[in-house]
Image (cartoon, rainbow, N blue to C red; front, side, top):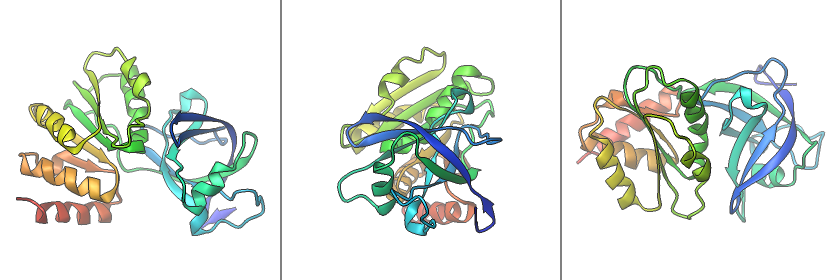
Length: 245
């Protein structure tokens, strides 16, 4: 099956991990020949109980892959609350053994090894993008003197927190906060890192607010990386500059 010329591959759902309240990681078998690196995202097709349903826009969601190939599965973490989208409603009723489709893998936010610190700032489940980066860093710290994870979760159901706390790696730090003021305070501490690269993942509002805060505090445009297509990145960057003090 193809969508706009992209080959879709089937992946069997292996298990579902409840990470926190309303937040789940779906682990799928790795389709034959599929590989990826940290920062990669993909499109996942969830059609609910109708196995013959033709994928539509409502049944497809673009998600970050939260695992690495050597873990033996392709994983996606997401929140499913009351009043969820059609995609999430369909995903909620899937069970281990069901086969879903994956396509369109892309990496717009690779882990940079430029002999510069990397600061990863995420909102909520957006941290899924960064989990594989921490795993890659655990395997090889070359070219990254410091890797810092900073996540804000106002609803108090942060994910991977226990896992992150267990990494005893020189140069790695992990912080979780639950308010904008606490986030900005921690960012202020991290501004002291020389020539750091700031990777940001979250809603457009979060990207705009956080990116603007960095610009207002002396961080250059070239140091800010977003998980966005080139066109969308440039638009977001222009909006950040317009929002500066």
